[in-house]
Length: 172
Image 1 (cartoon, rainbow, N blue to C red):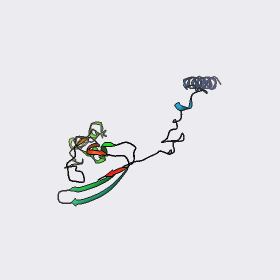
Image 2: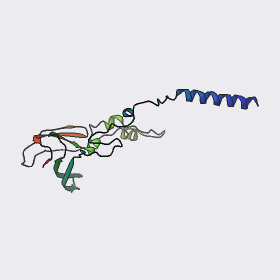
Image 3: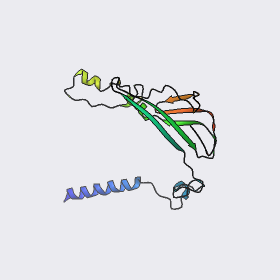
Image 4: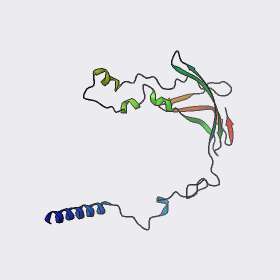
């Protein structure tokens, strides 16, 4: 009986401690801290508003598989539609494949598993980053064939446009 009493007392103390640690909710908190403020682009529910816009990009991709050299060669043309109310002087392009590049931060944070019976080759294989899987971009050009300045940082590429892309217009 004493054990049951101590067990119940322990559970009650633990429950009281947990309840005391929960933040108190203020019933008079302003809604803008809890819900987004409605504007021309989004309603309070998050639905598109009457001035909502979304960018658009159409891709034409030509790819060739070179089985002898174990590589993929490709060329891509992007038709970009600026549906925003602002002119654009540069574009961001996502390069997800660069996560597999040898210089990627992925290998710096990679975790491995060690077994009691691993030889040195298996241990070294845990930290192998010899797979050259990132993009090898040779050039970026506009529709007229003029080279565009670009900067690649990990999985993002910034392409500086030769001239601003006006609102409600498109560019190859």
